[in-house]
Image (cartoon, rainbow, N blue to C red):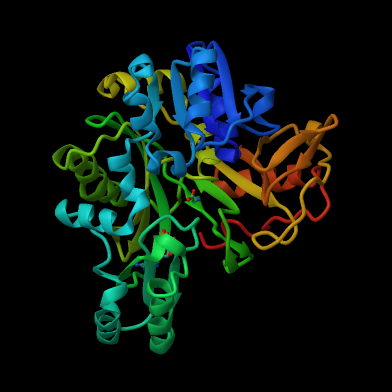
Length: 423
Ligand code: AMP
Ligand code: GLY
């Protein structure tokens, strides 16, 4: 098969690394890719939402399968775009159609889906600009902290958690009336605050059948001890030590199965990865959010623990034969530590030469924000390199990643040295 992976981060480098190991893969492409993907795939200079450009590349390179990394093209309907094209209707697209991608594209849609399928989640109500008064009254009845969520995609910034009632009311006004997050906050979901520890569950589905991938936990804050601004993710570990067999069983019966059954019941065309953001409240799992793609940096620890041929699994998604596949998991722990540009997640500089890449021996370095420039690998984003290691447990794996990270350098390099501190 000829396969095109859409995206250019650590997640996509990991997909390329895994797909390239399959004898079923003939030619592998990444668009736009990065300096890491170029070692296993051919990079194509295309934006992930340039559907016409991607279509040209699919024809030119006789692509059989398109693996969509990020959410934007899915929410914009890339799967529907190809399905509606007579010439290309046979292209296997890994990622849901637009109607199902709304699970990530609209918080309110996801909430309604959970409510109608009896999936445990925080209680909520949603409001539009003309309902500001009702929104304020609703907040007055709640107890702090207050959770306000822009309904639409807001690049991971659309959730506010506030302890002060007056501040919450003012922020609600800014979101609805001043369009603080643009179109995305035309509608706002206000929900009950859930207190607990978060984890992520990943399911691959063909729409009817599914396989569950290993769970993972990511570290979102920039600072040690989970302090400071939110980032795309500073590292991840898998498995998650506090997930006991009993807790996993609750996730399976209360959340994963009702979700997949819900796709069929509600007629949501989902062929791809479901990323279920969970929170453990007491001994019970609740859904914080759905994403319609793999997580980043969770992919960098989840795929290295899958022993199956990834192309075979993805083909089974396209052919709706996932019931014939069994997932095989590496029992070892995998951890990844993200090295980021100085200043990230606020302003940072790019174009810094990276040294030491060819000296890393006992970890896998997945590239996130890197590019080739005059024969050198240089930084091109906030999150730069994800250093993944295996170990008997997460502590051993993390120690390995930290040891290898000492060999890597670029001006301004920063990474958290305390991952796993909370476990
Ligand atoms: P989301 O984009 O919905 O995943 O929200 C971003 C982050 O806000 C989550 O990862 C949680 O840490 C936090 N969060 C969202 N909803 C809640 C909630 N109902 N209770 C507590 N924390 C929440
Ligand atoms: N690591 C969180 C995400 O991919 O959204």
